[in-house]
Each structure stands twice: as C-alpha cells, then as structure tokens.
Image (tube, rainbow, N blue to C red; front, side, top):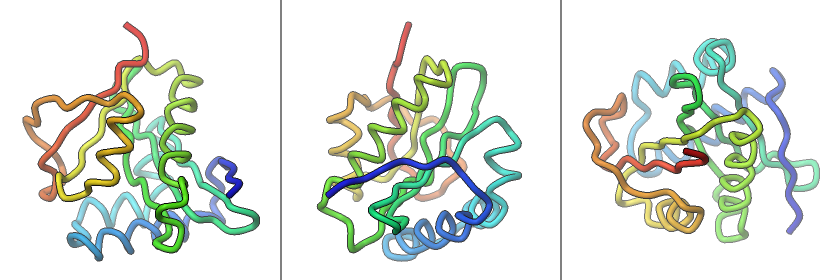
Length: 154
C-alpha cells in the first residue's frame, strides 16, 4: 500500500473530525476538549503554532494526526486516527513515523503524547518508533492513563 502525507487544508478539516470521533466513540467517549479541538482545529492547533497532517492512500484520506505546540521545541503528538478499514496495513506506523520526521523539520527536540493502555496497537507503534513511558502527572483527557515522550535531540 502506498501512502503520502499532506499538510492541513481547510477542506480536509471534516476528515480530521470524522476520523477522530470514530475511534473515540469506538473506545471511549468524545470529551469537551475533543469537540473543541476537532471542530475548531484551526483555532485549537494551527493558530497556536501546531500542525495537522493527513494520510492519503490514492485519492482517499485514510488518517490524520496533529502536532500541538506545547512550548518552544516541544510538541504533543495528538489526534492520531486511521480509518478502521486501513488498520493493519501499516498506515498507523507510516503516519506516526512521518509525523516524527515533520516534528524534526519544525526543530522540535521532544514529542509527548497521552494515550490509554487499552490501545495496544498504538502503544506498540509508539514504542517501536522510540517513545518511552514517563510518569503521567495530569492530562486534559480523562481517558489518558499513559504518557510517553520521544527525545529528538538533547
């Protein structure tokens, strides 16, 4: 399967919302913070210094992810979602590894992410790509029970 990464365009926003709400509703529930980020993506991510990317397979958008600006050099990898029909095709790993490369282009020195321990496939990908578990002190998401980081440069 051949994939490519595309930068955010306003026309793609509905895919950001739809793909993320689909997995959230499958495993958890859509929280207030999710609604804001997904429905107001430009305000929540782009205008605050972050980036949103889309994964295409042919002409279809099959995945999405965001890099939320936290502080200079630090981004949160968030809102990573892959169409259910594309799971198991390598789409998630391609999307995540491509986003790590995009973070390096932004001169990020560290990525963080919040997840839940029931998302075994996602956690496997994160570990495979070099993320390590760190203590979770707090999170905006009630579903998060795991925090991870990837040091890109010291």
